[in-house]
Image (cartoon, rainbow over all chains, first blue to last red; front, top):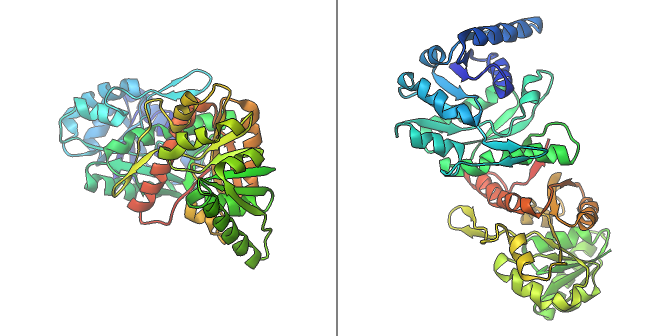
Length: 217
Length: 217
């Protein structure tokens, strides 16, 4: 599958790119195509140096979306709508995956959902009704995902109103390697799933632990 | 330590009683002292039959509270305030632990927090300000806790504004056997912790799994 990771030059985008590249074609997107190409080159070099499959390209967000089967929106909440709208002409039925969590951070993190209840609902409210929005990856800590020596062993909750799109993403999740997908229901559950990220961050800070993910046992 | 479990005749009270009895003196409380005595007898017989420590007594909620060092409020949300008020005269500085989650259930579960934001905050709002409220055990599935063959291996998030009370409960949690306590912050976090219970129940239903708990990894 061809996976575009918009905003794939940093944070959770990096780990998603490195790990999905082992089973799929990954396109790193950025507003700045040069920045995307640089990141893709860096990822490819890292993968090559470890003798791993290095199939990562870099493009502008628009080009990345046009070429992709599925689009992961790995940008901060404040850039989400702007990014989505910038690629809207090339979405035509493609699945959008949102790992986005609106948060404020001082010493600890707080979930700051928009008026619509969740980032996912907010994005849906400004896009055409046929948008295929899927919520996933909120419980993956970016630095551990990007560390290819980390064995992971995490669960990811996937929510969508579009059952077919949800199924596609749930089938994709295990390709990260040792990550399990769980059906979290429809987008009305996005609020709770998004709020797990500040919970994980705060638990790690309060209990002096490494970045945390979760596993349902 | 002497632990009273009000409403300890069923649901999560059963597992807490059976497991805490291995390291502490447990008093099962009920509005009906006879019911409490029957449950305590049943627990003691089960523990004896397995060659385990069987130190469980049954009393009315009021007597149980009077005798205890720490009071676990294992009742449904709709009985929480009534139960607390019925034992108020004997609380005098004792720690109250709330595993309570306000939920509605049809096919799936929904978190239905009261106006104050959480069950814990709601209870605090109707009790004297010196109440030592600690939130814990929300992520423990009752049937698995009561099954002494279940190896558990779960995490419990503990929240309280009273740091000393939180510390006491965090030290108590591992005495359930293979359950870890994590500091979840103050009572303002109770809302999120309480909302994890319907998340766990719904994940188990949607993914056709056994009752689930969670582990932070």
